Amino acid sequence: MSWELKRVSTRQTSMAATALPLELQQQVFSYLDTKSFYMARKVCKYWHYASTDAVPLAKQLRRLPILPPVDAAESNPAELEALFDEAARSLMLGVSTDRAFDKPGCLTRASKMGFPITPRVTATSNGSKTVTLNDRMIALFDTSGKEPVCLAQRALNDLKETVGNGPWLQIKPNSYNELALSSDGSLLAIAQERTIQIYDLLAEPDSFTVNEYVSSATGHYICGIDFEQDDHVLRVRLSGKSAVLYLGTPAGEEKQGQKATLEHWKSKAGLKHTFLDSSLLSIQGKTNEADQMARVSGLQLLQPFVDGYLFGAQRHGGGESSYYILGHVKTSVPHNTATLAVESANVTVLARLESFLSSWDFTLEALSERGIGLWENMPSAHEHHPRFAMSPEGSYLALAERDKKRIRPAPLTQLFIYRIPTTQELRATLTSHEAERKGRWTTLAGFLDKLESQKGESERPAQSSSLASGTTSKYTVPRVPLCLSTLQGDITDLAFSRVDEESTFSISAGTVETTRTWLLQDL
Image (cartoon, rainbow, N blue to C red; front, side, top):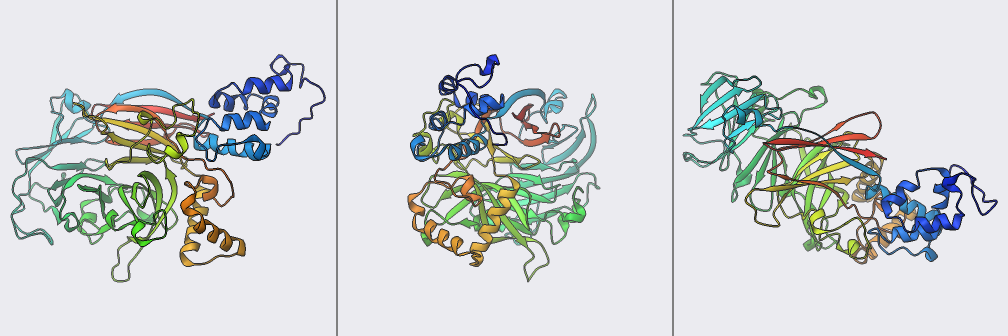
């Protein structure tokens, strides 16, 4: 503690808030729920001092999903206090969530102007540009004013010739196409079965398009596409086990903030280049056996980090229930090419993010008063092509998962928030895994810890954030999410923004009809 309180009488002070004897204050604290107990510890230094006793701390910790169950007789107060602080951060006991303003969705303006809300109509996130595909005619409209203004029109390329390495066949007209519009509304990507076209909507109607047959999609079909990373990469979602392709190449430091043009997609680093193929990524399972490798699905790149990228994804197989992960992939330039790509064998799991089934070992033991681990408050991690977003300073990870628990006339999407390790903890974990991968152990203690971890790996539950950051602890705290809301429709846009210089952020989740915003604040 930063101060020292010495108890000289049965009462701490003469003030009414702390006039009760210390034993009575601790008795009152034992009846509080965990979130109220967390807030009471922050009222003043006297209440904080009263809450440091092992008995009330252990009672509060037993209400949280922590393994093994906490026993006051087996732990000292300092250890329990550190454990409670860790659990409060990981489980977001001190996070306040408030509904903020709602804004119209991306297609609200277009809908008011008479455009139908169908998969063949798309718009920028602010609704200022709208694109329609009608009778194989592409039209770009300016919908920022009171009336729509047609900016450009062109016919859909029928692809009567061979495309890249695709079959020597004409692509027949398709009644359903996946559309993706760039952030500024100038580029349009269209997926037809396993072929992707990119149009420059502001160019001449007879200008050339960029076409590519996605050979990695053989045996599947393209079920979704999105522009990401300032429109320099195209996230392609495939049917079957939620495989994801990233076509194109992210912008380097010299082009950060610049939007991609059609010239980028025509280059060798454009549509012909596969930056990442999630079907080639694999991570070690529960044991070190070769048949216990786990696969990654529903992957989405988040932001650059230490010679690579952070990503969010689902983890399946490997002898465990499915759950979400925060991971890292390393990038490099292969010796036979000059274009940046992901090293498929260099994948590191930085944080385990629990799902409903994966958290059973923790939540069934805890006497939770917050509904932690209930089916309606937890993601299922069942290949729903999720959407992720990371807060600016990297403390929260938002997850939007399509709800498929029941058959409903309209789709529902659940929105969750995870607390993730700090940047320093992520770097430490990445450094540790890199040293392990290269077989370098700087100390004898580190080598012995590695042998001990391999010996008891199959007997221990998932490692907590304290273990991942290199500290030792006999308790494990899972990362259980906070369920913000359930929205009607698919979430098309998910983003964080900073509200102030302290610890307040906003999270916005947009559908075609509305954009809802919440304020998150660390109290």
